[in-house]
Amino acid sequence: MPKVAAAIAQAQELALRLGRADLREDLAEIRGRLERRILSVALVGQFKRGKTSLLNALVGEEILPTGVLPLTAVVTHVRFDQVLRVTVRLRDGTELEVPREEIRLYATELGNPKNSRGVRDIIVSFPSELLAQGIELVDTPGIGSVWAHNTDVAKEYLPWVDVALFVVSPDPPITDVERRFLEDAREHAGKVLVVLAKSDLLSQADLLLVRRFIEEVAGEALGTAVPVLTASVLQGRQAGLAEIAALLGQLAQSEGETMALALAGRRVQGVLGRLAFDFRLQRAALTTPQELRAQRHAVLQTHVEEFGAALTMYRGAWQSAFQAVTQAYDARLEALKTSIRDALQSSATQLLKAPGHPRTRYVETARELEAGARARLEALRDELRRITPEILEGQAKPLAHQIRTWTDRFAQAAADLFELPLVTIDLPLEIRESCGFSFKWQDDAGLLPTLAVPAAVALLPQERSVRAAQRSLEEHLGAFVDRNIGRLRYHFHESLKEQWHDLWRGIEEVLRRLGHSLEQAAAMLAEQDPRTHEILAAIDAVLGEIRSITSLLDDTGGT
Image 1 (cartoon, rainbow, N blue to C red):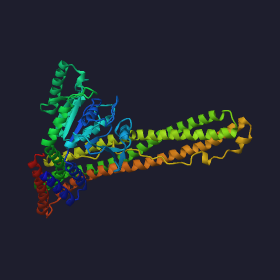
Image 2: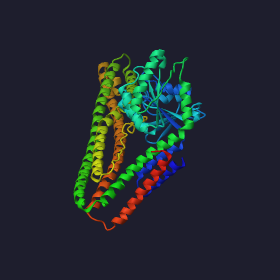
Image 3: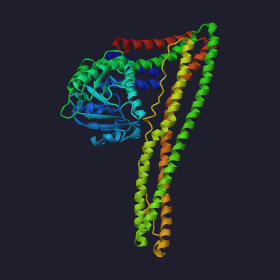
Image 4: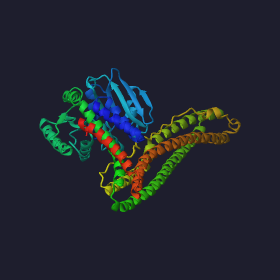
């Protein structure tokens, strides 16, 4: 622990000295997770395999919601505490304390479709004997469901996992989606355990065959032999839970700290690798033999010019995509507004024809229409919450992946030119969870307080009074609907603009650093700087610090 903590502290100090705020944020996150000193056990696997039911059974109470449909939408951490407490952490930094019964409003696909509420994760504290051993259980969205974003969330969480408890079930035993996910887990998770849930559905003979099949497929995907644990969580005949709990407790006691150190080490290695790439590129340019300098400079200068042109193009494409998002949204909003007004006007016509005094009928109709307008506008607001991530993701995600492919090409070209090892250039592409529509309804003056019963309604014959009442109500109703939909549109545009540009700023910062590295290398090739030895010494000093920090991680086995 002291060596890894020292490595993180040294890496943070180096990033601070070099002005790399992006790396400092990554390192701060790594340090925070390490300091919690608990074994993080994530239940992962295909949707409807029984992950959430197994988690509830392990802690001894039905804490998280389950159901017949794929439910889990966001990552939910279940940790030990003496009292039950639920904290919802939003992407904007807000933390909400919510009652236990409201977990489903934030954690499930039904209550929080496509994470429209912008939830980062949920922390559930609970007094459980298993959790008290220094274990945190993590419920993750199921892979392979109709909601692809759930698979993305599960995959992105793997690098933060000490133990992946991979849950399968007999129907079918293991799919190609699950096999490929296990291959990802092999690269990122610290340790993988396989649990066959719903084992009570099989006879003893079939159970033996299924276990052997899963062991073979999972072992091939993981590259090592893996035992398959069995579990049943049916009320009254639970089985296998004590064995799983005992194994997790043993891991927490014997390997928990080792796994935490290894996980932190892997993450720090990635940060240091990105930093080392920049300086190795500069060093390679400075030490290029004279006879190769002109050739390499011409090639690299071409890359620099292409990079600058492509960056300008993608900056414009990003802005155009934003316009496309808002236009798609406005078109949808206009259609919804028209449908609301048509429905309310039709209701007004029917209500005004009811028997009764014209004045009374007018007031009662206005009151009923206002209630209907509010209900429809509330439904519209909820519809916008649902479609906002779809619209944004449909425009931004394909473009972001194009940028990532383009970035990798330039990094590869630079590495090849100087015969350097390639490093992955990560981009902040977490679009899915950063685009929640959080419009809060405010009290409106409404229809009734602004309506005086027109004299024509009370004085004209019935047929003419109905027409006068209808014209009056339609006028006020139209203004009421337009005013509130205008507020919805304004809030969406402002909220989306901020989120969209924040995302681009993060991407552009990474791109700017790569472009700057290419430009520096090209400049070093262009002319022999009289301070070459001094610059080389400074570069070697930084690379030496990186090697020194890496050696601390090597000593802990955290490579």
